[in-house]
Length: 254
Length: 214
Image (cartoon, rainbow over all chains, first blue to last red):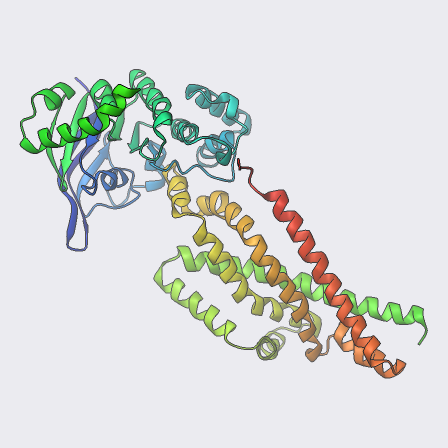
């Protein structure tokens, strides 16, 4: 029986009168990769930020393992340590080298000794194939390399789950592959992941479940095969057809 | 007055000018940074209060403020005119430095704060380890301008009776009957101090610049 790492119940987020999303229910089991797809402006990114408590939901609850992280008495800094987040625009700390970017959370948040933190950080950089770039500053790295450092920075905290917010959307097409490759490897290693992306090839190949979000609610979810070949909902079919046509050509061209 | 005494007299006046600046600038930076952080990160009430502070302080001529602050400072604690004047000048400068730091904080993207919070840092840790190191680098060029202003404004403590360069100029002028030379010497000293300071800060900016590919 798979163990749920993340449980979202009845989550609603509003800005004023407008609901960004409403009554979202979602469970992510240990080791699963869940991909969220959907048109822009349907609250995918906001949903991830709610999970990481970077913004607050108006209603509903979220559990990380058995702990309710939306509870009032919950220590949010502590929660975020256990949830890795990768952003669309990388957001590396610009004044620090790749190594120091990965080390900062270890020394300041986990209060590890410098030696141990450095060793751990080098291990994580190695995992994303960038040990040889440890001394480079973000401004000296390509977008793909920056995003891999960002992944290493999140991994270094040994998170229970990794959230990816359109991790390849800001990248030049030829740099997307190296980031997806790292993510694919993570999924194989059994990392629990919740991924917002438009990369249908990745979704089809890696996802255990795809969730189609539109206008703030979950229209349909299921295995890649179910969604791609037997979508129950007309909107799902339409969206997948459009996006596969758009992105599929690019993939074939690779 | 012989040349040696004349030079010594000027040197000790210069020491006062440098002293006033060395107290006023860092205390203004400290206070200004604190105010800027309160303004950006501490909710509506502190934003409003710090904005009010900045608007009022920057709307009054420094010399007027200096007198008011001097009487407040020296009225509450027993300080020499030198110390009270320097601190008052620092307070005047804090409003301008607050705006410099605030601008720099705002130009470090909000994403940096978000990324720091995302790995579990508290707001305080994020400000210290991520926001300020970037902010202070960005602030060096505009801060260099404020440093020049404070060096020159240190002449205002003349009015409080501190024997800095400008206060010595008329005395020298009277004893040597050479008013042009006396004031020209004062001007040259201010110029040299400002020149050296801005050169040093330019160097600092280059040294601390974050490496990036062109």
